[in-house]
Image (cartoon, rainbow, N blue to C red; front, side):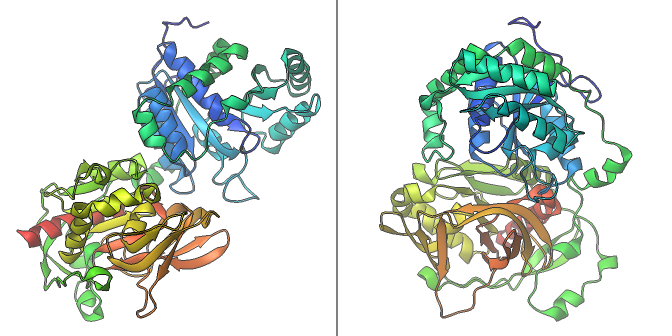
Length: 539
């Protein structure tokens, strides 16, 4: 038994790495409550806890970060690769006492109904992590054993190490389901949570970031811990976590795949943009050097005339040796813009960028030293009046477009680049007016799911036909004006087929798709190289 002050072993490669995955039989089973309660309880014991989330999600990692005091990481073997997941997990877990991974949907739910791709089960097998299955046992007794047994038999290689039952009616009810599961399944039921209507944690908390910053959710986290500890054997959970096999170094077969994780030098031809085929063909691939910088030739700087602004493609010519200048990427970060994968930010830094955070909601404009702008997703519709009133910010975006600064926007950021944003109550606010379109919020979800985003045209992020993987999740629609063709950014593929979406013109790339740069880290390198080229042109 581990005492309150005794830390678990730390986790360098090939050594013990205590870890658990908290999975559910389905969405709503209670895995988020169990995860947060467990993280809080472990932190109160003095343990250093590293959080992870399976799949494409921003809300749950924000909760994890608030509870543990360190950034939670997403693990997704479809958006990235198994080797990338393994390396991310190893690096983030190192030096911490225990890692807790929260699953997504049901244990076996993912991208493909016929395989484990994109599922919690896939992450469990890649990281060799014991699974704690959370089962909602309302109105059932021995049937709970049938559910757990089915989950065990669907994937024999998976280590379902224990069960926590949720929404028990009483201690007697718990005893019944515990006996049934342990008899038929041969694994321990390590705890239970009683029915508690006040314990529901909102899946989509619109005021999440400011509420966390003000400490308003701390009582909720403490309540989750108290409810969990009331009926759960924490020491037994720690033993199950410690039973995980040592984390193995990447095998030789993984090394090739993992090599794409690290930032590699970008071939100079990768950062040539031109609408003219002649100039593109003038550049021989074999004669180009690596990590080259160049000058911007004949960059067109049109004026922004509200929404009538149309930027022109930039022609880049490679001439000089590698540049050591560390470009600055301005990242909007506050309650309106807070959906960023930590990996995306770290890959940009690894590629040589310096990140400068700023808050449009605090009245701040684009930092003067910026060589690029990154507008992430979030809830701009909840703060539309404040954003519309920050003319420094909106005019800064327009000036960035005029000057051909690389500008990347996802989902909420994409919405802010439009002419107007109309909220759910019908109030309309003026936005940056760079993209000739109007945004309309709606009560019904407009899109949800994985996306494979193929570039429709060359940009500072991708060459035509290159692919980034990510996901889409939004409640708004973007309606373009009819008088001109739409310069789409991506051809996206999802469960329901393909479509064109987003906007890419000049040095603007924007769309609803939240891309994961870990799916092609060279996109981050190309972005940073374009930032250097932008600064060279401005000098």
